[in-house]
Amino acid sequence: MTEVDTVGLRAAFVAGYSFDLDDFQLRGLDAIDAGASVLVAAPTSSGKTVVAEYALQKALHEGTKAFYTTPIKALSNQKYADLVRRHGAGRVGLLTGDNAINGEAPIVVMTTEVLRNMIYAASDTLRDLRYIILDEVHYLQDTYRGPVWEEVIIHAPHSARLVCLSATVSNAEELADWMTTVRGPTSTIIEERRPVELQNLYLVGDRSADRLHLLPTLIDNRPNPEASRLDAEAVRGARPMRGRGRRRLYTPRRVEVVELLEESAMLPSIYFIFSRAACSDAAAACLDAGLRLTTAAERDRIREIVGARLRGIDDADLAVLGYARWLAGLEAGVAPHHAGLVPPFKEAVEACFVEGLVKVVFATETLALGINMPARSVVIEKL
Image (cartoon, rainbow, N blue to C red; front, side):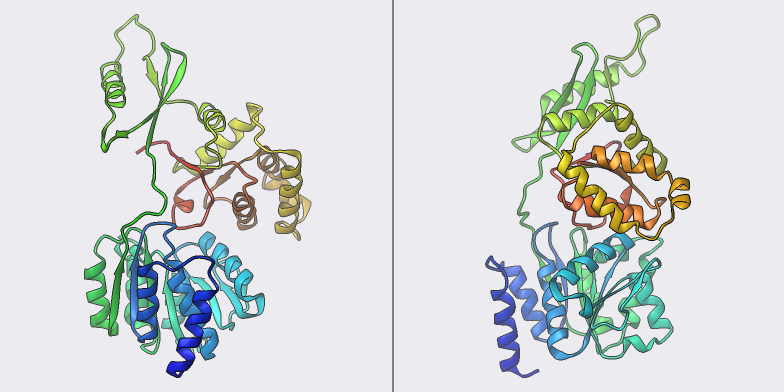
């Protein structure tokens, strides 16, 4: 690509956004134009994927290939849907353990393990590969799965440039130095400004007042004295003396938490429990309690999405999977999401949540890995 082509492509790419790109995004584009690999460390929702999108656009313009890798199937599915909307189904493929769609497309979304296996098999699909996006690259630090990312970085075709994205990598400069050693020039781009400030809250039940306390954990960047007082009381009351009954403070029931979130206009919410069975139990408890968080129009749309996602699965199989109960929860606005669900169920939950139809998803860590879910609040049951 000539310098004139690059300038024209970049101008058109930047003009396609309705906002001015931030400095760190422009520096990422500079690195790609210079032919370097790039590591972008920026907070969630800050726009680091703009840099990856530019690499994809360049691959399409050059007639080469780009792979977009993610650590989990759910994120791959969502990214595939996003890219199809942006570039068209004919130019985007998907390769996961569950799906193989248009694998020879110029842009292919896949889990990182799929790419590692392709590299070791010397797959013909690697031909003309120019860009590899490694989303959630901090997985390199994971004890069990980190070697997969390391092997990809080391053994990927040297004609390919890496675009590494992370919101939580702790040693960006050190990682970029290592990448420079094994792959050549690598730019490090760090953005610390968070576009949407987070508010951390503390929730505890109080039997003496028959209420829930929802308090900020910090006030003026200092521990909230009221939360500290409740903590102290909880410690003192951890072992009630004989004859004095139950502790005054308690962990609220999940149904109580959801009701409070609804009253406080804090839905949609992702409710992390970290147990598959407990996620399903929580959704069932909300359904049994008679919670209904959706409108009639939303329930109609939920049924449309579910019908499209589950088309082809016969009634007998759906009955075995507990379809009727699961759908009733979805229509009420609550759903579990964990690795134990069959892929069409998980994909339907994700699609409904993205559209704001499901108000509470009870999830294990499968939704903590960069999936773009429009949540107003996040509940962490235990730390």
